Image (cartoon, rainbow, N blue to C red; front, side, top):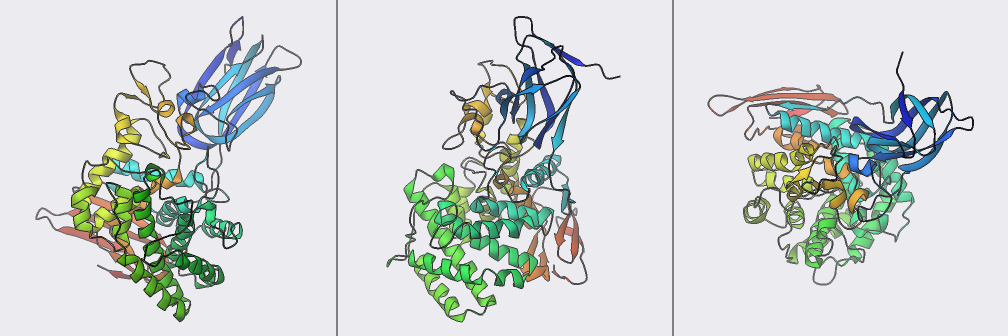
Length: 508
């Protein structure tokens, strides 16, 4: 028989802290055997993404909250009762007995709520750290794939469409087609009648268009794209009106690229100039597919105007990367002058995919792999099992891992002490889907899998191992999975083996 855990209150409150070992989305099932009190007893249950968050009080300097998902609550339990408690993102749970009593707990089980779908995409290589990073990015997004695609499972349990782009890119890489993508895209469109901006940001309406483009390239679903025609046309007119006579993006407030650059207006301007140029290129392609010839011509003119306006990205890797991806800056020069400088310093969890992509466009795969190990590997070194809303490699200095429960002042409580803007302290999400971009980046650049025609009818497979000796992966497509294995020969050349569905033309 299972021996109960007994909490006894004799002048002091008894409690227990549990570590379930991995971040999950859900709650707990608390099986109580005896309370010794006919009317039951009160227990306080606190969920935490770190041990110290589960030990915290609401508010104060460390800023623990119940925003978006109730994670700190008092519940009443009785003899021989099964109590299902909570729905949030957590790894740790603290249970405290509040009344003068003796509480016998038989079991505390975690309840995992997630979509039961296979991981069609896979990646393994000669570096076990990169394998863990790839898997962690995939799992981070999996937890956020509920009925809609959320940004975070503790906080930001909402459809933030700009943040969705890295998540959708990960979904294509790991799970293939999933209904949560079009459901989320349609939801935010219906919630944003024009002339509104999605989630209040012009940039997020731009990201919505980019996702529509990329989703069509992946699925080849023209019927779905057709349902977006009128909204895309109206949104394009709005965006086009936001280009001033000098070719500068002049879309209105709130002007936003990502949080680390939020207070630097010139960087925001540079990032939005790049994003506007990029979305205009995507719209030109979409309108070509939809047969909107007049709008195709207008997009070409808008892109010329946007390209004619010079911007200063300062030392912001985010804005510089977007300018490279938009074709407005030279990738080799920008990588040498900024992107590769100081390794992963200046990296952003949201913009990490784009910074890595710009560096890959410069051919710097080995430098990217070092950056990935330092940045995403840095989170893992602190005990992360999902990737975070924000991270800075300087946080690693003298940092305690997230399963550390001491108030020892000689080590830094990473979760409680860091964070800015809307994610100060424990409000900071430690499972944020926008941080997963490293997972698709590896498939696109290390495995070298790039879609050349809508519906994956034509795919390029050109691996680049950097400093790896071998790598293997599968990539899901509408026709089935592409499998790739490559290894470095002794003469420095690559041995590449590809197995693809017969419907797909593979360019080697």
